[in-house]
Length: 34
Image 1 (cartoon, rainbow, N blue to C red):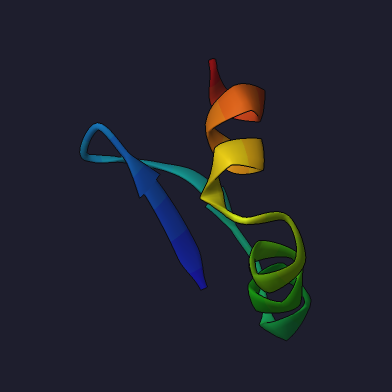
Image 2 (image 1 turned 45 degrees about the vertical axis):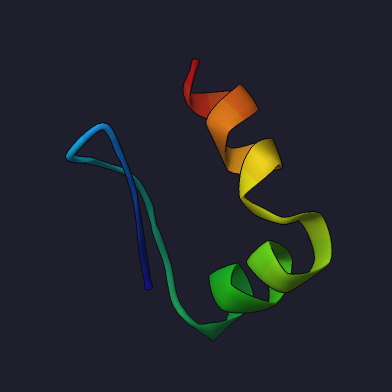
């Protein structure tokens, strides 16, 4: 699983990352990348 923000990979992981995305949503990833 890769999370892209602004055309860049900001996070990569396995199934656990997909579960985290389901639980927290993309907003949490955006906040971490900023």
